[in-house]
Structures are given as C-alpha cells and as structure tokens.
Image 1 (cartoon, rainbow, N blue to C red):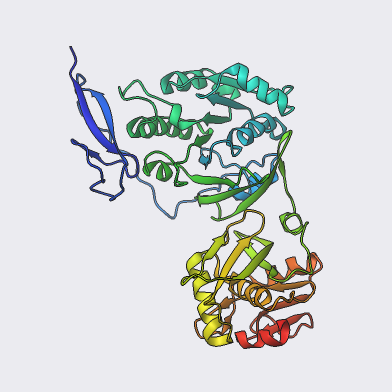
Image 2 (image 1 turned 120 degrees about the horizontal axis):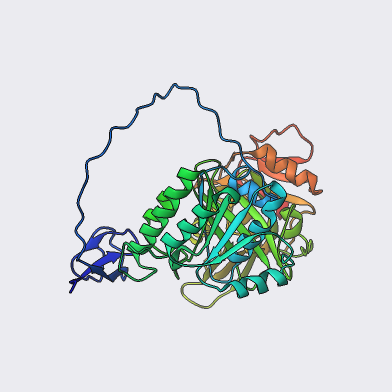
Length: 447
C-alpha cells in the first residue's frame, strides 16, 4: 500500500513545511497554513536536459498584434485588446459578475473572428445554457465544457485546437491534476493546474482567461505565485447594493496598470458605460453644502467624481471620523492642516466623508476637493456653481501641482464645468481657472 504523507502549505505565499503552525514562518500571515495529503509512492527521477539556443537583445522582433473584442471597456483595461499567448486572471467577490463577463466575452468573440471554449468547474452545461438564455446569448456559436480535470481539459482543447483561439476557465480553484493527490482548491493543486494550463496555451498561441475567487480580505485566493505566473491581473470591484461594476487592472505586462473599465449590471447582463463621469454626476444636487466635484485620473482616463462631507457636533472625547472610498489617515492629515493653516477647528465634531458611486480614490490630487468639502460642510454654504477642485495639499498648507492637469481640465470643460480651482502651476492664464497657492485663498472662494 502507498504511504500517505502530510504536508502543510501556506495559502498566501505557498511555502511548505512538515508541521502545522498558526503563523507562516515565511510571510508571517496568520491562519493561512493548510494541511495537504500527498501520495508518497511516486519517486521523482531527474533526467538530463538538452542545451537551448541563446538569443540576443538587439535581434529584430515584431510586436504581437492585438485583437479587439466587442467589449470596448475590456479593451481599454487590457491596453488595447487581446494579446496572443497571454494569460489573464480575473478576480472578484462572489456574484460580482465575473462569470457573466466571461460568458458575454466568449459569446461575442465571434464578431472578432475568434472562437472561444468556455470551461466551467462550478456549474453544469445546462446551468450555463440557462444563464446564456437569460442574457440573450443562446443563439451564439460557442463551445461549452463542464470539467475539472486539467489533463482532460488539455486533451479536449488539443483535439479541437484548429477551432479554438481563447480558453476560459471558471474557476481555477475547481481545477485539479492527476499528478497530485491533494484535494482541488489547495495551494499545490492551484499552482500545478495553473502552470499546466499556462504552459500549454503559450506553446500553442492561445489566449487564457482564469476566473479566481477572493478571500474575505479581498485578496485573490490561492498562492501568491499565481499572480506572478499570469501576464495580466484584473479585479472586478463593486458593491452588491450598487449596480455599477469597475474592472481594474492591477498587473499588465502589455499595458498600463490601474486602468479601469466601468460596467452597469442590467437584467441582460453587464452593459458598458462609455461616459462614467456623466453617470456618476447624474443625481447630483448643486445646492447642498459639503458636496464637491473632483477631477480625478483612473489609469489614463479622467473621471469627475463627487465627494460629500458631513460635519456633526459630538459630545464624545474622541469624535468619530468615518471614510468611504478614501484613506482615513489622509483625512486626518487634511483635518490637521485645516486646523493649523486655515483656522478650521473640527476637534469637537464628527466628520463623515464618502466618495459617491462606489469608487475608491487613492491619488493625492483629491486633497483640495476634500478640504473644500469640509469647509463647505462646516460653514453650511454650498461651493460655487459648476466648480471643480483638484490639487495636492502639503503640511504647510500649500497647494501643489498634480499630474495630467490638462486632461482633468478638458474633462471638466466637456461636461460644462467652467469654474476650476487648482494649483497656480496649472496654466493660470485661462479665465475659467482660479489658481491658488495656499489653503487660505479658499476663504475668498468658499466662505
């Protein structure tokens, strides 16, 4: 009888140890060490390799042509389209729309002259057909396979390689290989299954999409090495209570990172939002204090985002500071700068700040918009009509120049905003630009 061997792997970094521990010894993560059962009867014998041909950096190479899909927002996030022999990982919360997007993509690839095979390990073929019928995709010519064994999947693709250009796996956590005896979803199975699929598609010039689950912390489930193995990592963001979805690139070997695509969840699936700035500002009220419009940059796309602030008196020794969609530490810094450099004391007030539309802002260019929202909320006076704010604030209260200022101004003018408050380094000769160099200059504009 074969001897069963136990080993313990970290689901965060993939390190292997012979005994269990509450904390991983390599990455120091808690509660990530899981037990795996291995068959110890197989003996691995290393064979000698063959010498490979070396290449030079200055040799002529032609850039691989991209294939555009019918989903323009996906093309934007990928950097212009699909690159041959690329592996793309899509992660997101359960029910956020990963399978819907991949099913719509596989059904619409026929418009680009490409054929896709949709492989699911979570649903049956009948369930996929019912979902396609609900999305209005039942008349599309696409191949469907319900399987979870990697060797069977590769053999099926190899038998139909003449009619396959794109392979979609939903999801990688359900795949397993015969080479390992551990259960599907373990670190070793995810790593081995992904490596086999990626090596096969790169050798045969296919395009691979891998759907991936996320943990309760919002990180991609499975070993961290999975993100290093693929060419592109995309996150599907959004709130189940909000019908907007944001597809963001975290890693992209063929394009820029932090590029976003905006979708709206409809009855017939995901619909593209070509002008998200107008959509996010659709229900805005101009006569409410504490409401400010910020001109931000997501990847290479300028977006107009609404920021709302609310200030309420508090009897607690430490008033509450609550933030949705922004950094809490940066809000504390802006409150301190306003107290010292502007004269606005909020130590006995609760401060609530939110970014409307479910977006998350990380760039420092939102400092000026947040400061304007706090000043407007504290004085109970709305900001001037059709105003836009952007600029970074230093600890001394100075307003600094930010990147891509011209793109921010063009986006604001396109949507009818003709009162732009920014740093004095942003082309101060224009009549519609109110350039400021310090926070104190906001008193004449807002107070």
